Length: 180
View 1 (spheres, rainbow, N blue to C red):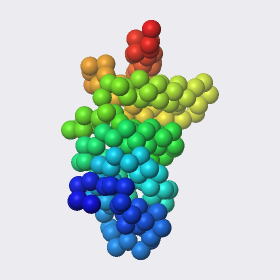
View 2: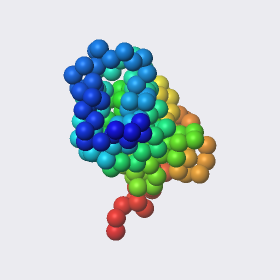
View 3: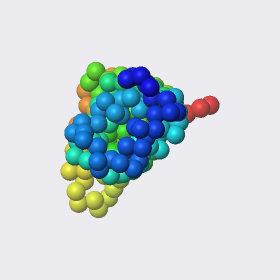
């Protein structure tokens, strides 16, 4: 195994994450996840998923950094990010930010935009639901979605008060992105 790629014979890495994680003398998992991100083996997704079920402090950030720095676009990695997106909490937010791309990260490009827009629209509609006493707070917390939709719309992020306009944009985007 080279320092930059994982192979089907990378058993020590797989074993460490699957069975011996508590004994690993690591405080930063970025390099380990970066090596795995380059693997062409789709079963690597299950190793990473298993490892992220019991993350150590900062491990999700290390995984996010590894995806960013590795620049890997392995199909299994995209699928893993979409699976994580379906979860709640920090793992879903990490997956969203890596798929959407922020700052210097280009993200996964236009092919993933419809799924991300749909997720943002669903979350904003839930936040806007009648009778939701924490409506404004929920919209504030959806800043990554508001930024992403704003970027797609060619403008700055939508503010929480512009949630209606952001949802209208998302609906139009999805109508035009739908296969004919």
